[in-house]
Image (cartoon, rainbow, N blue to C red):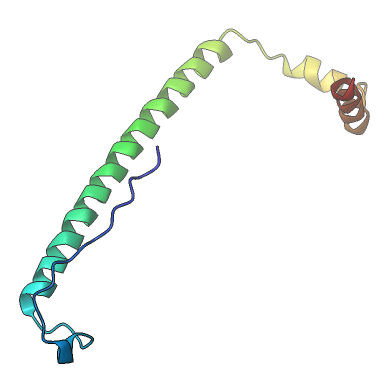
Amino acid sequence: MKPKQTSVRVKRGKRSPSKARGPVTDPGHWQHLCDVLREERDRLQMEVAQLRAERDQYKNAVYALLWETAKDIEIDKKAILAQMGQGQPLEEFIAELEAQGES
């Protein structure tokens, strides 16, 4: 989910043409801008917390599925060690997979 882009628009008071490009000295302007930015920060922090909670739920679901699948598998370490070196080299296996993908 992509975060919603927001823009901050600040209402500026009327200024005389001579001060139109000068710095904003109205303390109310800066207070309003700070309030707007704080609200956006709080909203984004809440969104991050919600996304983290959602991520944790997905992660836990995947772990539960893997656990259910993995507990039915029996691993015989002696048999695995006995097979080492007797199989096809990895490079040949990859080449075979690539050849199958091309056909």
